[in-house]
Length: 131
Image (tube, rainbow, N blue to C red; front, side, top):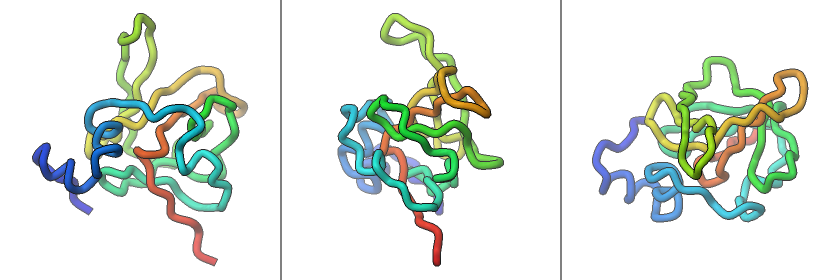
């Protein structure tokens, strides 16, 4: 799936809410995302380009209000960027394939990685495993 190139193409593909999150680095309100309670086996993909990013096997309830994962799928194209906005230092997560904003990475997750990939539902799509 190829990613749009112009700002207008992104708006048309994603719609206004997803566009705000993925292309403008916005954040959805906590506990509102459609994928927060998703528990079926499957894979979470970038809403911008369809790249596989996270497995449901690494998803857990962090209590933060956003879908959280302790690891990414093997070879997931995720770029980590130092983020000094909001008066703090964080690690922003972007899709390395289409540069869509995903969320942030925090060092307070569970074993085995100790990482918490805190991701906006609107930056993801979900594909359940076929039975």
